[in-house]
Image (cartoon, rainbow over all chains, first blue to last red; front, side, top):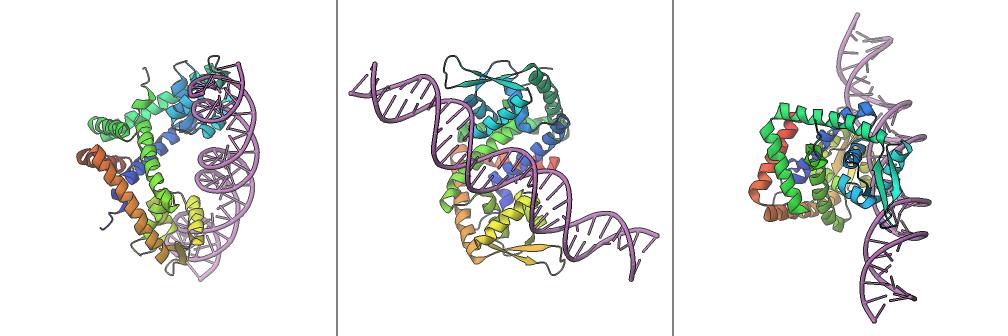
Length: 142
Length: 142
DNA sequence: CTCGAATTGTTGAACATTCAATATTTACTC
DNA sequence: GAGTAAATATTGAATGTTCAACAATTCGAG
């Protein structure tokens, strides 16, 4: 059984595409001095409702300790704040501050312009086909 | 311009899919006590020819300092070895040892079985469509 | 009720990654 | 050809992540 080259493995293609797209997005977000993870956190919180650390970790693809320390930094920057959950006192709810909301809007605009650039240069159909397949794969593998 | 939910961003879907597939692969490779990056390195080197650090870093999606330290560990485990390039003495060529070759074969078998599992449960067509789109995106974005 | 088990979040130590600076060799310019 | 610039790999400090242990709270069986 001859093993195919690594460039034909799904896991490799995903890693490569993810790396490249992330690199491009990082370059744009850099103008606001922020990394992709913080954009994700602000974006999730920007609807104004609070999330527990567990919910948030799941939503932004980070594990708990990493999220704790990232939130520490964002609290220090006054982008988000913590409130103990009155319903379940084990939980801590994270909220987006006004300053975080304002930053979130600027970051969204940067992220949207990146995606628009991909759609322009690569095509609308390909982009949508890829998104649908990724959703299906996640659904099937999750 | 209302910003779509994060789950509709291409960058998020790529990150999520990559994370999930990598997690599955990691779980399998764990039986050999090895991480995905080392599988990639051994796979690339397993054709027997040497690669410079630069070539290898590009091929396995790692930046130079990270690769240097990963190779340090693999040298300590006798999986690979370094030889100064006689053509260009700035370069160092990395070769796979016999022990590395044997491990590479076992890892390939694990990786192939993971991919076979995806094809089984998700479908041959979807898998191939996705691979072609990812290749095209990388080509277009690289 | 009460006590053990499960859930949630944080912390600290070990570990890994990254950025900037360095050393070495090669290529290029005049 | 001498001197400067570029390419290659490594190192060390700063930073970030992960794993395992911990504290606090809630749940649930008897």
